[in-house]
Image 1 (cartoon, rainbow, N blue to C red):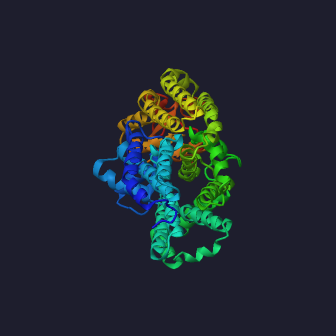
Image 2 (tube, rainbow, N blue to C red):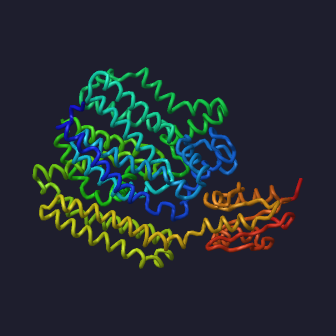
Length: 549
């Protein structure tokens, strides 16, 4: 069935065992304590609000946030959360469950794809690498669209590969499934799910001097499937909202996202270098040896695919004007397979010396991670970092001990045991973070309690008004809010609503810096919750407004 497999019998016999191992591993680390912490701002709370809004309004086509139409991403993830939330309630677990589920499915898919590219052991090693990669673990536990998006993108490439390596009717079926997968990715987070695989695989065929093979694809049926699944929602929204949808969704959030900067999310051309170095931890140490190993085998079809996909994805997103760390997650399954093949070759064929650079580099990878976290923490949350440092010591100790043992084993030539110890170290680290680090951190997160306090304190007739509030205030309060993002906009709304009583929520520091001179004399403090101040500004009170015309 698959010409690339060394043994069909062995591959089929290994499937169930491999999937049981890797999925159990992924489910353990991705799902434990998934609902124990409040949703994080800004995206988790907003996406949860989109799903809850579908149930509240009965409109499952046009998503709304804070009372306004939201034309940013398609609705597949919110649809799933809305269906589940309507049954079980919109808990943190329900909101996050599909991110964790699709991250775990991507681990299983990586096992199968690695088997198709090489063999079952490579697939197993790749799945272990992906499941224990720092950023993949983090994304699996966030209620955002990315794990679902990159599952479908990886599935599209894996199906294409089976078509490329197959023949006749089976090849056609796999090609069609690739179009279906790209369509599902598009209804998840946009046309990048179709554009990225199409451009990268076209580059692969050009590099292999096999561009004629593009004619093998069932283009008419495939495009029809892709459009029906991935683009139908866009057509419906255009018919409902016309140019407003087209300009914002397509013009701004698709085209301008690439050629310009959306919502201040910009970065230098080298933005994704530190992202990959930190996000791939601890396997970062083996990126260079794996790249060199596959480059020497670049004429082999599997190595060429891994090299082209990773290089193209990195360049594609580096050239984009808008940059976010999660954009390169689509590289991670392919990097996992690339590194897994290096490990398997070192174990089966010999050549553990190829990994010596990686084992020696583990210490540098840990130092880079520790420095990055420390610098960010000191800059953004210095008081909290100082208070929480003792709770982080078990996590740091787990990493230091496990990395040291794995490196010693690897340098002594015990590659398999070093690999197992390194993977086990990351699982232990994740568990320590979940149960020793995050609970104390949660005590310093005041958005949810402040939102619940506001919801309980707002009186009939008072209009909620937030100054630089995070989305969590809006979501957890269950209300629509007026919102000001700077002093001029706050003053404008304050004056436009001078005849309405306002309930203002603001961070204490922002109040003292920006608002005390404007409303300090007229506002009364309703409550203080952590770093938040909840204020009442009565109607008709003295406000710094020009006279009425």
